[in-house]
Image (cartoon, rainbow, N blue to C red; front, side, top):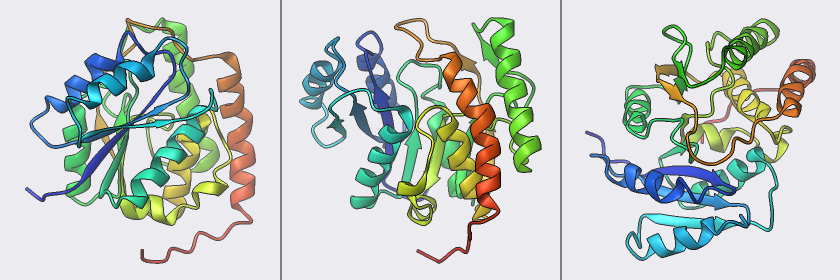
Length: 247
């Protein structure tokens, strides 16, 4: 198998119940992944747990500390820039709460090794694979993806998914400082931008399980950003060039 440098970016805010377990689960996988925790000054001591674990994984576990809760999108953008500066081949997004199964990092990686430029851990590519969500939230999430596909023209079934693998060239091509969304619509904008640049996007089926520890960061404002922001994003794309340069 191709030997690549792989970095899993995990944003955290008040994740003390989950952070040690998720870190150990990633490092227990039969493939080499490093982890970057992007920590938004959690008052619950999440950073202290990570720093303690860094003694056990001195070359594989990293932390990027920020001054406060600045939004999911900016957390990932900061992580992407950190990864690109250090020449990682594949960069992953993953939540800290086990809603994204760590074992599926291997499936996402495999999809990119087989030729995809971006791999998406999809809840909806093979039915509806969501556990522990109330039906109302499942329907809201599913039809949000239907709406995004309708507006943008993308064929991706799970347009709002946050479990992804990027090849380095995708993140080098996308102008990260021009990504506008900072909430969960960030996930849509990143897929849309990669798609507009003509990158190959593969969907890998996963089973999404809602968190059992800690507190969800979901809110009504997140869906408002997605609904109205997607329309603005589509209109803005009519005036933008997506000419790709090999990087």
